[in-house]
Length: 344
Image (tube, rainbow, N blue to C red; front, top):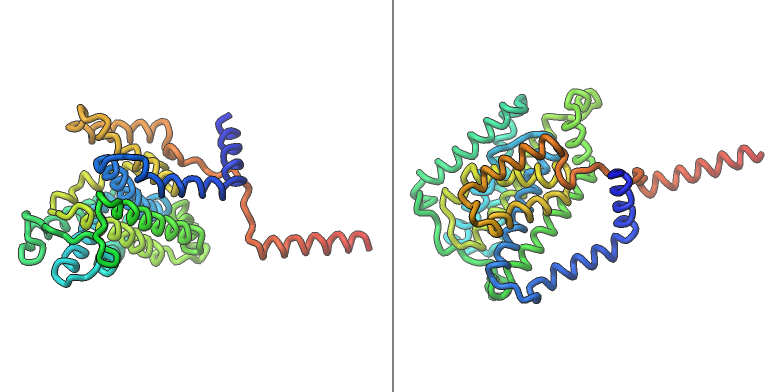
């Protein structure tokens, strides 16, 4: 059966996770030496950027159960803030990206507080409105955002004076570093007390409240963390492209991000990379459907929700729960004491 196949596959990966991880890292690090042109490398970088965007939304939707249709707004805030800090103040990319992420997370806090009592369709509508409000502000705040003309000549990231571009593969390696950092951050959060609280809220918010979990605090925290990761991705996107305008962050972008999360598998880390690889590369290999790509996305989502709502890689782990080291030592000690008692 499929469950047995999944269990065997997961057991194999768990047993050989170190060599598999080293192999994947070696392939990713050596990818620029495979002779791909800049066009292919740009698509790969975009897959990494959308993987980060999906990781951010996955914290909110996949693990906490709060659906957002306005994440392009957080991406825009991170991108515009980082770009303005770089252009106006001459700050390097790290400082600018952190500034964009912090402001995006603050906006996530402002959005999360008034939506505490909302869920489902109502929350989706509010987040959709948030994304459109951000876009309108960017279009009309000419003195700061340059309106519909957008921001040009956004500085590229640089290390020790060397500009990172697609030509020298610097942008690719920075994308790898940021994606790895955001992935590690998400894994650490999910495996912590905060992540367990997120998942309990998704499963049953009332039961989580009865167990003493401060659901309001954690729901707002999910918005903040999600917006922070999305802001980092937006800052990197702006720096890579070199030009942004309000039309770079439309509702279509929010739709694409949530499509990646649903297709790959909500509540998984691995699914974000697969979903991003499929949906970002799809328009490039099927240009004859370019004008209908969102129709295709909609059909894919409907089929996924009908036949596989958990997503492509959304299967639950078949492995037995792994006890922490201290808990395992305590359990072994108790078993030893019981055996000694029985022998006595």
